[in-house]
Image (cartoon, helix red, strand yellow):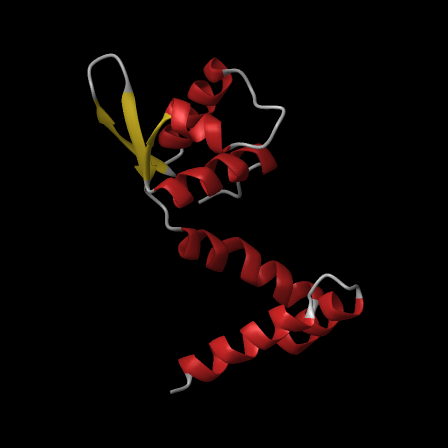
Length: 120
């Protein structure tokens, strides 16, 4: 599995959110300025060719769904990146974002609650 481009990742984020979607629905989820519908369609066909999307044929259109889960993609590409940048320490990751004011106190409390809930 190869890492996706930023634009491809944006499309995949929309598909992961929608679960199953037609090209128009994916385009509607994209940030402004939205690409032309043909551009989205072409990128989605390429993602299917790369094995990231699967599709159902509805005659003249296709409905797409993720063939690779968000968790699977994250484990493959994001986790090693964070490990390399932060010495394999999630504490270093969180403290970096806290120091840069990228994580609020409420978000940190949410993270702590998630960890506590998982350990129960």
